[in-house]
Image 1 (tube, rainbow, N blue to C red):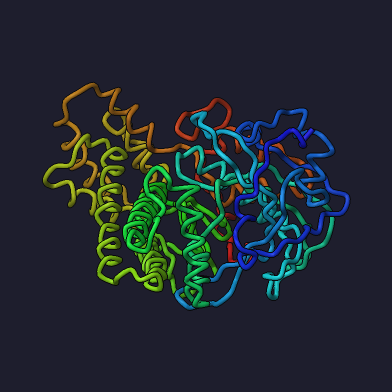
Image 2 (cartoon, rainbow, N blue to C red; image 1 turned 30 degrees about the vertical axis):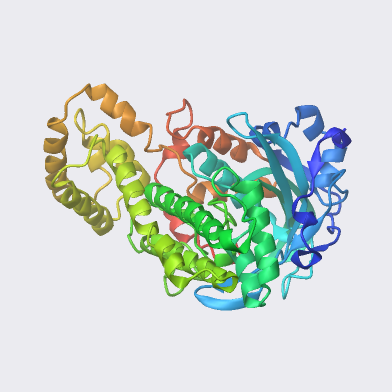
Length: 494
């Protein structure tokens, strides 16, 4: 059945220094917890295929992907601002790439990667396993990002078993099958720069440009063209990264571990660990319990993205690209991010277009959200209805007179707009989600998954698939978090 798939192994055709070929260590007595049928459709897989034993065996690491070459990749990186040296796929196995199509129907090759399929040469002190808890969180998070329209790796399915995995407590093993055009990271380039292998750095660059940036950048045919190729490539990566940071900021998403080895060269959200969508807004919110210095707090993410881009750009000095040329590229990051963030905020606030005084109005907005720890998602969502009824909006604030004072300024600004009021409301609701993957919702899905019951996961996927439209019978997924949610702490072990 799976032998009929068109499978390629582009990454495996790179020099052998880029990876280690090896087989996964499969789960014992695996079962399939859930399949994302939307992702399966992109791969050309039908329900009969995803319900087959062959599918279960492949996705649990017990059988190879027909036609695929299984491997784990090496890379390096900066972790929390410190050079960490060689890293790599410590618990990930790339199976190969399946020919399918993207969400617009255009042909696309999708790499399949098993996360949690056992030890690799890059596991260091780890065991190569993933626990059910973290697998559910990644599975749901990728679906949430798709619904929000934010670039992300995808997740095809979760397989689970009763195999014990030892973390802070004894948990059970799972494998999440990740899907993306490529899993190459900033750290993939840093590795060859640090090891003084400009030949392999250029090989990787040629591979990435020819496979994923061919419409934007030409592969250099000579050394004379190399600088232009590097700068064109960097321009694309910088733009994609800046736009991704603007996307994250505007939905209150915090990644938690923005190390250079966790930054996708394609501008995708990758490596979901201690992430979080903010509940009560705090500009300096830290979602990762391990991030004691707040390096990756919400208000630091855009700067962290640029810092990481500097580390990436620095690699190409070894290819003879001048520092001046690299800095000229990097200087484009801030205006791209600022313009994208402002444009998104105009739409989220229903302002139609930026005008004098809006900067102060927006600054006061962030201040009042921060001071009162108002819910990030619902504050934006309920703002659309304040011209008819401001009661739900004001109920989110502990100091309602202060909120009312700001709201009077906002109403005056909105009252001066031309156009249909309902169109403004609809436009705001189209960019301000009602449903996001709050930590407590993910926790409930995990509780059920431990009982091999995917019902909460299924309901969550339903609302997250279209988070901007209110769905009948799903009010619980738009509710403010309960008190016990304040006790949830996620860390690098998540």
